[in-house]
Image (cartoon, rainbow, N blue to C red; front, side, top):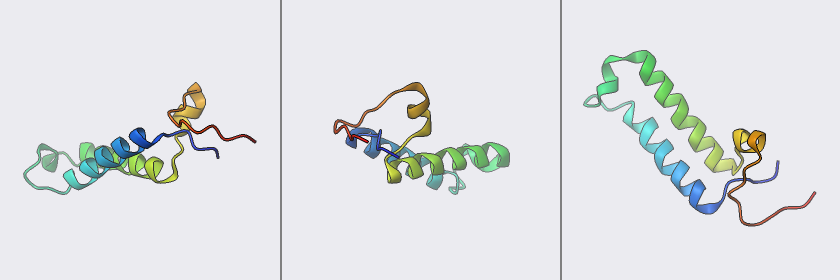
Length: 74
């Protein structure tokens, strides 16, 4: 897997992913009363954190997008 997530994209994904995953556990958030929506938001947050950690996004690969400035050759 070649990285296709650049530095700014990676930081943004990590911040949003962390906010979504932590936010699902806060009782003062509106998601506290909707367990299905809470699970969906938590899963999206985890996916964002995972893609930020490995610097690879399968969706970017499918649509041919790369925010990574350094081009890696096979």
